[in-house]
Image (cartoon, rainbow, N blue to C red):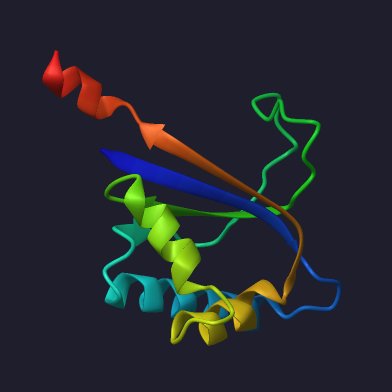
Length: 117
């Protein structure tokens, strides 16, 4: 089973994208080193000048995807960034404070169902 978390967001006005990308990479490295994530994709930008982009309700311009091995791992990630926790809090805050208009979606990869049928 693979759980995917899609994070959609906008950088805060005036944010340097390179600085945010560096902070994003550091946060993902912390989660990976803690054994929480199975991986994370690079930052991406929305492509909304194509008819394939049909989402009109959410206007976020950037996204990232994290992968977790099971349903317990997103909960572990959330606990890892809790303000009372260390070390995940600092790398998360450095990244998260640069964002606005955030939406987080978790979905389960159903490809494993084919293997069990």
